[in-house]
Length: 312
Image (cartoon, rainbow, N blue to C red; front, top):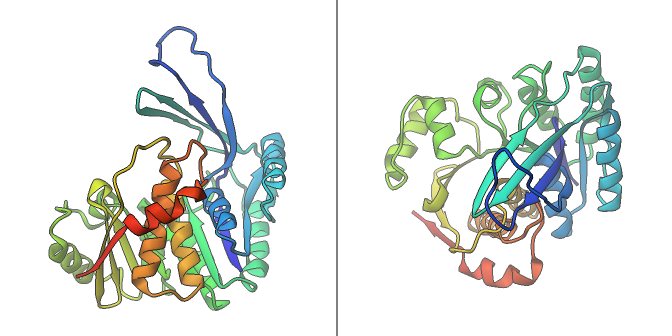
């Protein structure tokens, strides 16, 4: 089983405008509402890929009830811990090829509520082969939370795929039990290491990661580089992946879909090149669909075959 963790889920609301966004006036829209948060995007894609997947995390208030109902409608298996605060709402306005987002910070989580979740997570992790942890942490939750959860999952024998940044990533890399995979983008990695990188200078990138030491023990370090594709350091091996050019419809959730592809491949014990191909295929397909965390599977073969993966 794959267990996905969404600590700060949201009702993701997409507003598609036929014309420009008009400031200080009325914009009429037909919203698409999705049970969102990065981990839930991962969950839905894994469901499309046919994996046995369970979603967990924190749900609060009436908004949390709405999220649970929407997951039920989508056929998503879930077991979330309940909290008193209201789960958040996040809005994306898509207009003239642009995407303007309004993201609520989310509820504040009490210490007792967090401990209740940790105990639930401990039970669920015992049944998991792979655990994905994605996104921001809600207020009241220490930056070391993912590191703590990663240790619990690792002790249970699960591989942990962590997609976060800033203090949460730093804490996870400083912990004794490291994640199996991390996926910073180039700017996030630069902020962590205190320098900037040229996406074409892979040797300098690898040297900086090796010299830093915090990534020691992380089996997969995947660095996404926007239009330049991504590079993956898997043990002593280096791979470069490039997805095909497409017409982007909705980029929200593409990174999460990439993580889903990685989780799918790693659970199946696929070779590194295949894991990267699966991840890039999922990320690209998500960007071609108006729904967040959803793949137009009729286009799978065309995109999968167009993804380039090279061992350097």
